Length: 255
Image 1: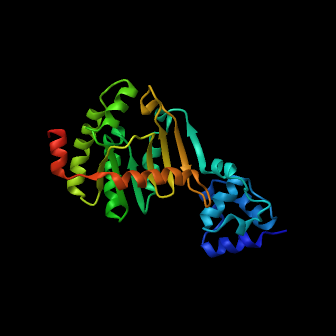
Image 2: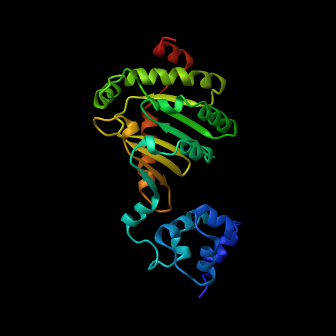
Image 3: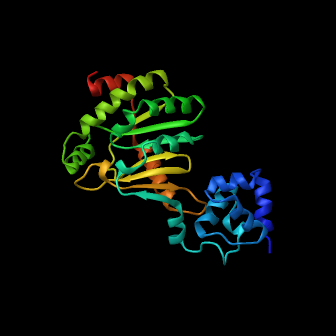
């Protein structure tokens, strides 16, 4: 029996079978079988399809065939996990941020590797010029949380890394004042790199630097909770962070 609800949702979305297949990373013939033969996709594909078509998953497949448990849905939001940050493909950060249309967020203590990347700077410029909201949250180099994180990582130079990042971001802030950069004094348990409904989460692990800690690639799905948990962390930190000016950067860095 064909799945006319899926066929109708696909037509309403304006997507083709090929475009939907590309979006959720399956073979177009697989999507055709879902429609013409009523085949039921794997759970992760059910939710990915619903997200791509911007409908509730139960609109496409009945409650008895959709993911019913929060645990299953949480797993579906995890695209992949990397054992260490340094094993993440080098271009993935820019690839994810390149897909941002509404918001681009960086929540870190220093995130020095990004501030050192000229291609990331070019991407940020292009995004803010296109109307994307860009928010960069760095740790306050003089706060207790930053000092403690440096001790936890075993190098005691976290404050210096943040000052380096500020120096590197300063020319970007001068030419593109719409980029919003703030300093926070929060105890971060994760560095979070978000682009719209996609993010990379880098947990902080005691005794090692962030580059040695794992990274989760997440994609928001309707009704899921894992992505939003980390997204809410960005918002809470942002609300209590302090906006800084060019003069503030000069005072903090001595530049």
